[in-house]
Structure formats: structure tokens, C-alpha cells
Length: 451
Image (cartoon, rainbow, N blue to C red):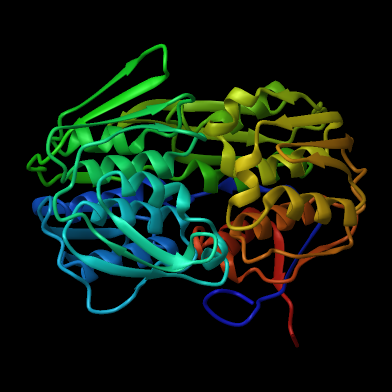
């Protein structure tokens, strides 16, 4: 069942051309970080365009629980009156992070170097995800963590009373782990250094610099080295959140596979550490164009136009690109089902430990809909037969995973028979307006009655 209520079975079926403007929500990654860093400032940070999905709302409540004043002014406009670096209060109750792995891991980092204790929990999906990848480096600061077997939630963290700066090499590309360590480093004296062998999304570094932290980034033989000087006084900011490229992926990919479609997605963030999907789609022959390219709030932004592309071809996606599109592989596999030939995706073992095992979930569902899929520990291959050759007709499990649910609904928009997901409820965690937005474009997505 959905983490926030009863299951919501949904069905998508073939539709006419998707046309119009897709105003997707604000970027989830930036929304989380704006709330957390706003809470660690002195003064009032204002935010416009905040994603008001459940994941971000849970982070906003967590910041209130730690003592910040967080106010929703309506229409995506929020303010955060912060408590300063090291100023978190000990929360009275459990911090409920719902479905959000990003939220819980970043918040753990923010509190790890402060002398307070907090207990974290979430929904069934989040409570099944491993946290050791974050708590292990946080222990280097002096933070203690006690949780369920396998390093899973619910988990209690005892923050470091006398935190030490650390030097840490991230073993697997993960913006969440990198960001957690950097946030912990804010309240540690001296310099905290994070080294990543493969670059991941850099919103945390950009935003820390914008808030006034002393942070440097350089390329070394070891990898990308990020050095943060601890115990700054962060300055309150105004943050304009660009629209989320991970959410834009769904109307964009739908437009590519539904005949006659022409969809414009305005104001999409095109941070190079996030735009790997669009590069990949173009290599497959997608009709994608960027219009009105500009910079907003330190982030590159453009309007993205996607048109039906009947002659897509399968390609091998470079493993080095995985970090820049890790959340988009599920919907990429849907596009690959309508391409001709094999699309090979390697270096993606991170997909095994997301909200669900995304490789297993997509492989099983695609096979049920007549698509040939092979998979291994850190790779999978989708063999497409071209436009009009996807049978559809199956019921797919979402596994409490918003991106799995949306990906199969996109599949149903171009398959020969309707595609159903057992629970579309988790979609609200990241893309609460998915259904009405797709309906405006012309999609046929319905909630199943009598279930």
C-alpha cells in the first residue's frame, strides 16, 4: 500500500497527441537543500517555486522539529527563519521522513555534528533502505547511530558533542552521501574534505557557496575534491527553485513515444550533473531542443521542447553518465522499449537500493508487457522492436516507488493495450500534479474505481 494511505490503482491507455505546455514542479533536490540550509542560517531565507510534494513537506516539518520557523505562504512561496549553524534544538518526537531517502540522509548529516539526539523513521519503503552508507562517514565526526539490523530505520542518532573535521572518499557515486558529509562539516572546526571519484549532482556545493560558506572544488588524481571550512555564519538568501528535470523526464519521454506529440517544458534546470537523460535521448534520435537558455539562481535553465520521435534507436549508455541520470533510468527503459535494437545500461548498481530495486521492478514489469529485458547486478538491456510494437496489457507493481509508478503509466500511453499500476499513491511524494498535468496534455490516465 501507499506510504500515506490506501493503494490507488491507476491505468494509462493509448491516447492522441500530447500537446501544450507542461509546467512541472520545482526541483526536489534543490527544494530539500533550500529548506535545510535556510534552517542553518541566521535570518530569514525566502524560497519561490518550492516543490510541495510530500517528500519536501516532510523535510519542512523536520526543520520545524529542529527549531526553525518554516512558513508556507502559498503558491510555492515559503520562508525559513533559521537557527544558525550548530543551533538545532533536540526534537520532541520522531522525525518522520516519509518516503524520502534524500531528506533523511541530508537531515542526518545536518544534525550529526550537533550535541543533540534524534530518532528517524519513514514509510515501509524508506525503512527498508540501507543507511550505513551515510552513518558510517558521519561516525567519523563522532556521531553515533543505533538502528535496526542492516543499518535500517527506525534509527537514533546521537550527534557529536565535539565534532572533528574529516577527509572522506565517497566509495560509490552518491550525492546524498557527499551532501550529508558536507552538511555535517558545517559545524566541525577546520576543513572537511570530500572526494568523489565520479562527479554527482552539485546542488549542495553551489548552494553552500551562495549562502556564504567557504568551499572550494578542484580536480585531483584522487578525483573531485571538495573542501569546506567549518563553522561559518551562513547568510540568509532568496532561492528561486528551477523546475525539476527528473519530473520533466515523464512528459518529455511520453511526448517522444506518443504519435504526433509536441510538448514544451519551460524553466527546466539543466545542471550538467543532472542532464544526462536528455543527452542520452538525443543520442537515441529524440527530437529534443533547448530554447531560451539562461541562468537562474546560479543554475543553468532552459525551455525544453520534445516532439514525437518514431525512429528511435537503441544505444549503449556510457557508465560514466549514470550519476547524472540515476533517477531517470526507469523511464529511459520505457523509451528504449519503443526504440529499435538494444539499449544497454551499465554501472547502475545504485538502482538496486533506491526506493525499490528499480532494475528488478522495471525488468519484471516490462517483460509482463511484452518487452525483452536482460539484467545483472549492475546492468540491464532493453531490446526494443520499434514504435507500435509494445503489447502492454499488464498490471505492474510500483513497490511504493513513485518513479516506477509513473514510468509504467508512461508506457501505457503508447502501448497497444492499457497498462495498470497497483498503486499510484507514491507519485505524490515527488510529482503531486502528475495526473492533472498529463491530462491537460491529452493523456488518458485514470484511477481505477471499485478497488
